[in-house]
Image (cartoon, rainbow, N blue to C red; front, top):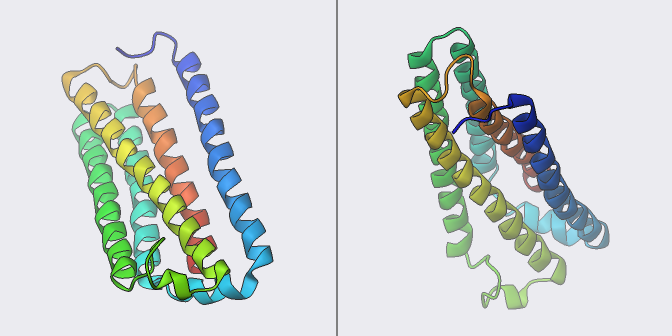
Length: 195
């Protein structure tokens, strides 16, 4: 059921997003601390990541930020069919992101670059830490993308049955806030791991 007071719902979402920023911010601080300690090993390990995968995923998620914004804009103009279409396109882009991330992980795993592999036993501590953080942070981000897709599908359903409309759209706007945070975090990942 849509929130009775959209301002309270939005405040609750901002508080939730603050906790997410603390979680991911802590992980980025951990990355920075290890980067300071092992700069050469992090550089060597980072060169083993595919710039193509990182760039493709970043572009996909930036476009998905635009499509979710278009969905909300269309709803404000009472164009619910366009709003639903843009919402589904956002979910599709999120799924493309997850599939591409799967290909990216598969390429690294097939090279033996994963925690506790026999190849890792021969690597320097900094490289092992780099890939440990890479899998932890990108995996956690992937979970957030998957949950975000589920939330957007839920919003799509409510939009379709009329529980979300141009006057009562707090759920969709809150879902969009979550999605934008996921996109923002990916921007930090791209600059952290791939550049």
